[in-house]
Image 1 (cartoon, helix red, strand yellow):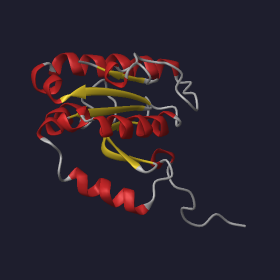
Image 2 (cartoon, one colour):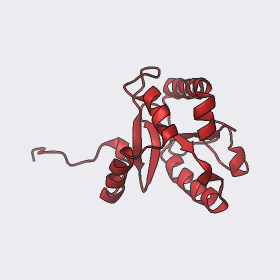
Image 3 (tube, one colour):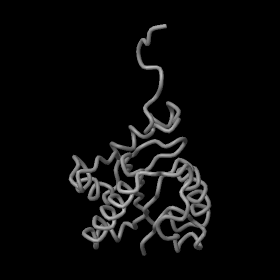
Length: 161
C-alpha cells in the first residue's frame, strides 16, 4: 500500500483536539503585555538559536511558549495564578504536560517587566541543559526546582519569585 498524504499529526501537537488548536490560534492574537515582551526576545530563534512557539497546544491545554527541541514550556503568570482554585487547575495542567516529558518554567509578570535579562538567562541555561541531555523521560522526574507557590509538590517545573 502506498503512503498518500499526511496520516499522522506532528509530534509537537501532543494529541490536541481541533477546539484547543483553534483557541491557541485565537490566543496568539491576544498576548498579554508581558507575553509580548517575552515573545519579542524568544521569536525567530533569538535565544540560543532555539525555536519557540507561542500559545502552543499540549493535549487540552495551551502553553504560553514552547520549545520542542528542549521539551520546555515557559509560562508567564499574572495575578490570576495567585487564586486558590487556579493553583489546583495549574497543578492538574502541569501534571498532564509533564507526562509528555516536558519541563515547565514559570515567571511572574513582574519578573518579565523588571528582570527580563535574568529570565532570559534562566530560560537559556535550562534549554541548553535539556538539549545536552536529550533523554526526555515520559514523565519528568524532579528536574528543576519545586515551585514554592505549589507547596513544593510540583516536579519538573521551576517557578521564580
